[in-house]
Length: 316
Length: 289
Image (tube, rainbow over all chains, first blue to last red; front, side, top):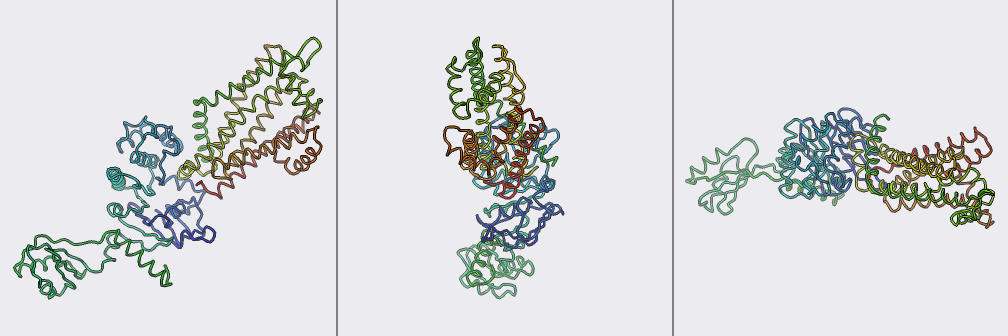
């Protein structure tokens, strides 16, 4: 859907984006993560062809993107970070969507607007003025606007920023529903815990440089070369770790309260062997849970490594 | 280009609708009608058996003093040679021109700051479509208000038995063309400066400079002012709508049809050039304020 190669954007002496490569595939939910000021929005503007990159190229739906390729941009529904309340607050939701339906030449617009408003549970607010909408409602309205022309790709810039938990859940459900319907999704955000629940693949941008681009599971696995199992036991002995370490696949073991923490090789699934060994020692495993690092932990690790590399004078 | 124009027309339609349902436009139109009516009625009161005598009406005493003092007595005589209608039309339209152009610059800057241009650009068009929409909206409202004002001026003239002459039609055309150039300046200022106040200040400043140069060129009372104005005007006149207006009227007075058409064409070219520069500027500066 989108291929970007070697994107660089400089504003005078300041390099906002430095050599970014991205590849967004059809049907996936792609998370573009980074702290505020990392270069996310500048990259998005280049991906859409609105801003010309200083170096590099972008292909949108297989064709070179550029400021004049409005035909390509029409196939992308964009939900910007800012809400429509500041734009035309005096309009009703119906008027606002009707204007964009006209701009996008949407056929049978009344039906389409009603259908989309119904889908996000805003139909009863159709004639309410935008200035009276809550943040969550505004975000859903923005998504409806972006969906009007039935785009191939939905691009959301910080879609859950400032939303309450209910609003976040509604937007998440909406995004996932759109993706289940076959639509590709690109989400830019700095709220990692939420992205972890939605994205198939993520890219992390930091200080204008793309640090990593990978599938969510592979990224998290890569950051933790060992599998960490937490086994809840009734009364674990103090010498249990030493007895567990005798197993060939166990690399480290420790007891924390009633939990045995075992780090083991990623080669194969050894949960059955571990359980059998504990039972043979006269212990009953009450639960076995694999501890997977969170995206937040992954992000901190990756960016810290980068900061250290920079401090040591190496490449960021 | 087709897509850009289509988007511009959709946005223009929406903006014209919003202007027509808001009271501001009608308040200003009422003010313009009142001014034109007062000017026509005042002219009627200034005519007696010996003809037009500005001294007979307090309003025309004031108008005569101001116009003759600035532009000379012969200019005043030529201005009213065909009656009050051309002058009434041009003067009474000025508040509407100021209102339309200032609100347009304000709206452009405000909406750009709020992200409207960005929203348009994310989807079906480029920023030039927004620029064009603003200009087309101003042009539409200008034509609507000029039509209403002309009808009112003609009706008021008919009421006091004053018929419109050739100069009235010319004034109508020149005022419309000059207004388009003023609106194009507004659009250009909106693209050059991203904040509402700075764009408005630049726009008002430019129009004031043009007005001062125009008045300074005619002023009889102050020779130094006139000299400075002549020098400045020599450099700036080619971008001033008022300069082309005076070219049009001079050509009309001398009955030079080709020169008149050429001056009108130049006025249109000035508007188009300003819009083209605005297009290049917004393409470079981007859609964000």
